[in-house]
Length: 566
Ligand code: PEP
Ligand code: MG
Image (cartoon, rainbow, N blue to C red):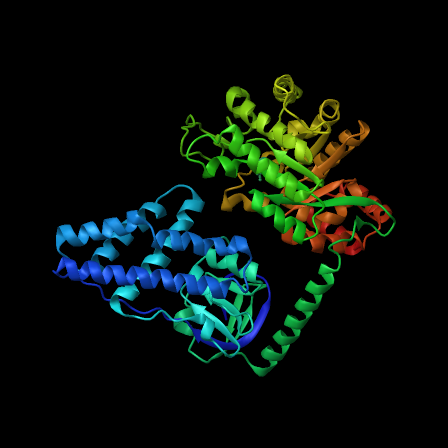
């Protein structure tokens, strides 16, 4: 049995299909430039044709957004810059086309791989994909075409390129396991869109698996079992069927409200990092967006994103959510999140330094641009704005004043803004949780950021593996801070949500329900499972249980209490 990362859930039992890419032996040779340029021209033409064919096959199983990757590949294959550089090198150095291509490709890949932005680094995979095809066409080698597979298989490969995943036929490709890759690698994202089980980062799988071996792919636990026993096969086939049945049953909850057995209603909403993630929230039955982390917009940019760019992004989310509430968090930068176009001052403890709203209050010009963009977008749906890392009443009031100034400015300019915008406060610093009843006089709502609230309460860096045992959402101390926050909001007639990871935790949900949390914001794929749970719980019973939980000594006691009451 080999371990990896479950990148797309499901279970598959089939035969191994080993995807072996052709091995190219490219050597530098002196050659006639004219002949090499002609060869290059033919290879580029064939590469474009190949990608067009793959796109055509992929269009039968992928959504238009996923097909965009092939448009990007076509753009690269038609890019005069890439071609020009290879041609130059053939002409200037008098070398063979495949060597020139190899050199230019490696240089471009290393430029992209060294970029700080994760999105740009991932683009290196696209350049590799396109230029590898080009080199194969130059060398007369054929890249295996996965669309020709005609029996049920689990594909085993070093990695799958976008062209490979685009050529997969779901009828026969029952899943895949790759040596490399993480949850956000290309192949992982594609597997989730195609709903094919996938385990990535399985070190040693290529050596261990032989073509035609029987294999169990457990993409729920991230395990690959080679040559299983008959009992194991029977066990996993049953598990696979149960998983499918559960998935179907969960789908039936998509349009249902999230309501306890005794009629207490809550909202189950999604966390997103970019406008296109809104679709996943809808698909998974989300009743809104509870956290749009806008920093990714800033991190992807080459410079501070301007008002119009931001306005388009916020408007896109509000429109996609079609009147459902959308909570957008203002810029949370600093700490571990850096920008390539801005040098933060060095600090001993960046997580305790100028981050989030602290930065925005120092750079009100940047804050103003974002607030104006948000307010302009507010005309297109139900917008809730919140400020991250508020520690004091004074900070909240100052941030709210910036919001009000931007609003007055836009109205004076005759720009339409929404009239039901809510302005809320993230509670992720213990001081703010303790003083929540006072902050709630000024804020329209709260959203508890438990990822930070726990790190600051426990004085345990959330990035440090060594102290990760102190990440204890169910510790009674954390539950008390949460209770203070919720009670503080309710005392002032305000609502309270949670957007930290804890909101999607199945053991925490019953306690949070009992403490009176109104909104739970989590990754889209957790929503339906959470709804199933909430819809099966009694609010009155959970209230009694939560009262006991805050009186416990340890998180283990709380855990046992929850397990006994669900
Ligand atoms: C949190 O701190 O819980 C939170 C949601 O914000 P982030 O994880 O982006 O810091
Ligand atoms: Mg936070």
